[in-house]
Image 1 (tube, rainbow, N blue to C red):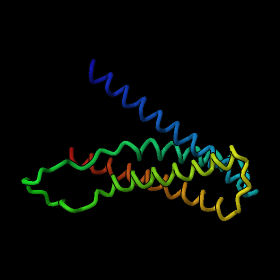
Image 2: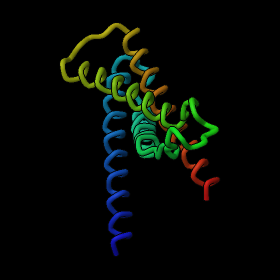
Image 3: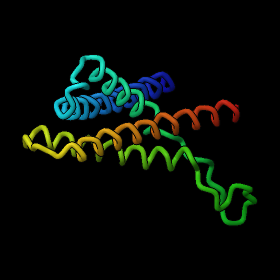
Image 4: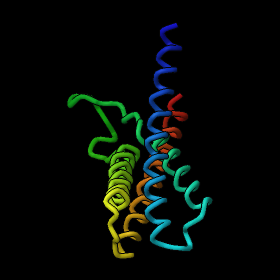
Length: 145
C-alpha cells in the first residue's frame, strides 16, 4: 500500500510540474505570437504548451548520480553530471524566458522584436535541455537495472 501511495504522489507531483510547464509555454506562446504575426496560430500555441509540459515533466525531477564518499573509489570523480546540469540550466532558462513573457503580457510592454526573439530562443533552448536531461537520466536508469 505504501508503495502505491508513493507512486501516486510522485505522479501527481510530476503532473503538477507538467502543468506549470504548460502554463509557462502558454505565456511564452501568447507573447511571441502577438509579437510575430506568422506565429499567431493555434498550432504554435499548442506546440509551446506541449513543449513546456513535456520539458517540465521529464526534466525537473532528475535523480543525481550516486554519491561516493571521499575514501571510496569513483571513476566519475570530477566529471559533471550532464543530466543534472542540463536539468538545472534548462529549468532556469525556460522559467526566465517565461517570467519575461509573463511580465511583458501582464504589464502590456511593447518589447522590441529582438527581446521577443530572445524570449523564444531562451524558452526553446531551456525546454530542449530539460527534455534532453530527462532522456539521459532515463537511459542511465535503464542501464543500471
